[in-house]
Length: 386
Image (cartoon, rainbow, N blue to C red; front, side, top):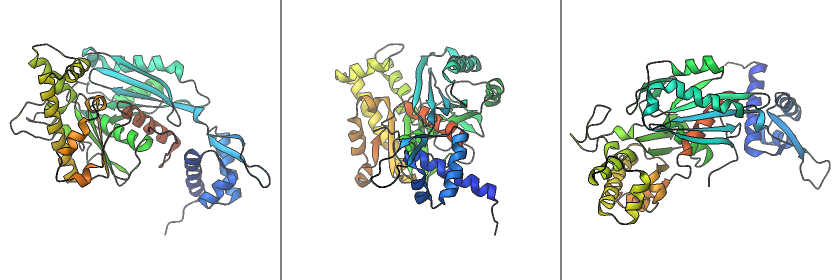
């Protein structure tokens, strides 16, 4: 039997105290002692350290009808901030949050196809723009998390089907310049973490992210599941039509060639004899009951229900969240998708629309930087998307 040192036990207890303050704030020292089963002396000592390190602050007295009013504690969310970047196919979204995930700054830059050949320059420009907004006391910028629309593993970019990123150690380059930790994650994995922390807390959850491609993030038994080398969750590259449309991944007939936002807009443009059609144009035509738009949406419903049915049979998660601009704009499509899942309607009630939409990725990115800075295993902020 291994007996932990006093320093290790103190460290574990400190994390438990901080996690509890984040989840239950405002909370008194006495209530921390009761909740965690630690002595009042231990709690007082740990809280004092957290206050000295600017992670916890006292915010006044709690209400009580008997005796002395207790001093209440809360997390000092303004002690530092996280920078979150979603490196999309045709745009870059970025956000700064405080240490509880509260949004400080949010912006979207449309690049079309032009930024892909100088991705480091683009990222450095965005970071430089954000730095004046990261002057928090005492920790300033505590981390940068970048969402990659492709496969990542061990903080390296492995595969990106829709843009060519150079074979460079992107995280190390940025860390050496900005002197903060940089984390590279698959976009769909960040999306499911954002959903799970800030919106839908269950032990087994899948988030289908349908935009330029179709990604799948999965949390199974409270752990992110990314596979042996990061390739798990590539739902968009599961084959639904043998010898079908060519996919950049090398296969033919992949789901995202029939049901992604990129594929649907491309197909409508071809039917209308145009080079390009925006989502707004597509939505307008669909509302006007345009025959081509209605047909394409019907195919989207059919193909997406097939993908969801496969997911249900393989993993049977408690909740499946569908995150798509089409279903966000036309939420009635969810019922149409569910109707095609028969005879599994007892499971269909667990299929829901995302409440976070595009921001799920950015909040998942914030979560990664925050837990790495605070060294926490459990992070349950009180802000929630309803």
